[in-house]
Amino acid sequence: MNVMQKPFIAKATINIGVGEGGEKLTRAEKLIETLVDQKPVRTYSKVTNPEFGIRKKQPIACKVTLRGEKADKIISMVLSGLENRIKASQFDKEGNVSFGIREHIDIPGVKYDPDIGIFGMDVSVTFQKPGHRIKERRLRPKKLPQAQRVTKEESMEYMKENFNVTIE
Image 1 (cartoon, rainbow, N blue to C red):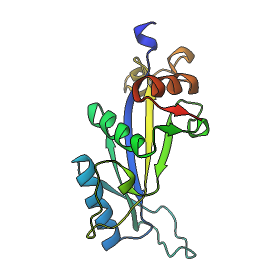
Image 2: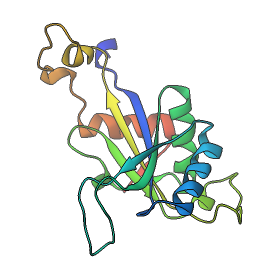
Image 3: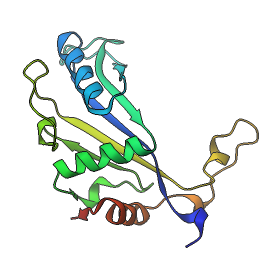
Image 4: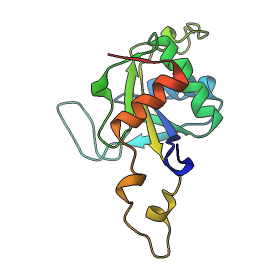
């Protein structure tokens, strides 16, 4: 296979949506920090929704973006908590995959801490191929050619080969 056609993991984003600020959000940030040894950033609401009790620009979640070996490590940890199974519908047409875990204590090696509690989390994995920079560069950015875009099938194959995932 052509080296420029091999997909790779550009980044993995872990998100814990709490829905409110305060103590609960602080505990979620502490959980992410203990899992990945990286400080998370807070995300803020974009609109006011009185039904959910959310105001605009109120902190409601936290996330962390991982790249390189850290991303591979955390993806394999979370997938082992899901018994290495993913549905085909969790892949989008650009080849990215998103999956969630209901309770963080399902991840092997993670123990329950009464100070933190139990949180679910969402993991989004973004795939790219070499040469993706032409789309994002400052000077003379170009449209990404069709051959350089990651397809759903390519990312499914990557997950099967590198993480021993069964796709249902």
